Structures are given as C-alpha cells and as structure tokens.
Image (cartoon, rainbow, N blue to C red; front, side, top):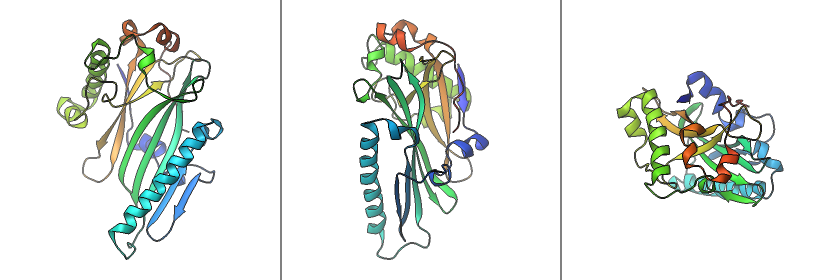
Length: 246
C-alpha cells in the first residue's frame, strides 16, 4: 500500500487558491463587494463537449454562490470571501479514451483557507460523457466482493496513515458501494496508456486551525486484479508514478 499524503508543503503547491495557481486568466470570474470567484479549466479547455459542460456548470455555480452570499446581508462583508475551482487531469488511459479529472474546490477569507476538498469524475472521450468505474469490473454490487475489496483496501491504507479512530471519523458515511465509496481517480502508471491503480481522496481538518489537508491513498491494481472485467484488464497495468503538481 502506497499513500500520497498532502503535507503542508505539498498542500500549498497543489491546492493553492486557483486565482494564484495559474498564469492564464480564469474561465469564470466574478468579483464584487460580496464575492471573489474564479474557475480554471486548464487541460480541459480542448476536450469537447466536456469543456462546454464544465463552463456552463461553473457559471451556474458562480451565480448560486453570489446569490447565497448576498442573501446573508444587505450590507457587504468587510472582506469578500474567495471561492475557487480548479480542474486538473490526473491521468489518461486506454489510448486517450479515459480522462480522470480532479476538481479542487476552496474557500478563503483573506489568505486563510476555511474550506478545501477534492471531487473526481471520469470522462469517456469515445462515448463523450462522464462514466463510472463500473465497466472496469466484473461486478459492482453494493457490498459485493469488488466493492468490499476496494473499500477495505482504501480504508486500511487511510488507517495506516492517520490511525483507525481518525480514519473512521474521516470516512463517516462511506460504504462499499460504487456511489458511496468516496472520491476515486485513476492513478498514473509507468506504462503509457495504463493506470497503475486507484487513488482515493480524503479531506481531514488541520489540527489547531481552520482549513483542511488532503490525503490520497493509492491502491495498486494488483490488489483488485481478480475483480477486473476483460475491459478493465486493458486499462490497468504498470507501477505507481508520481503525479506532477502543475
């Protein structure tokens, strides 16, 4: 079991406020007395129709965020909250068919992070839509053999990093189910076009202050190889490879 733990130094580089993490202008930007909102698509800009979908979603998100902040008071706050989204391609598999996407979301008061978390999704360039991991496995029944194996491997890896009690707190509500197992992405591989396994993304409060840190638990494909479908056996292979921050 290998884990990629986002410690304070790595965290600052990986999940820094999107507005300061990219030299290109944001794809969505709203700034007024109530909010400072920015969204960057980065590598997604050339992937259609995904880019159009993300742009529309984030425009609606920005409208909702601003409306919520305005509804709290008729008077603007002393300091407008900063809300950010940054989309990152974490890996590409099967001859550029599958794009594993990370969405880093954050909220700041001045320079103090108060909310930070990562969500994930998988884009199928051939089907031109977002898909689940179901097609990679022979079966994905709730509490079935595949989901139990993935759940136990990921939770076990997290417990090894933070202890059983803290891991239990961080995974409240998660279950051995494709829809409830948490945020999962395809891990990079030393073999081009393959994924070396699955990365599970968890958020944990920073001790003694606001904000959170991210822990990424890697489960190698060999741990669940017996549960793969014929299609899944084409997707996974090789060894874990570190993901570039930028």
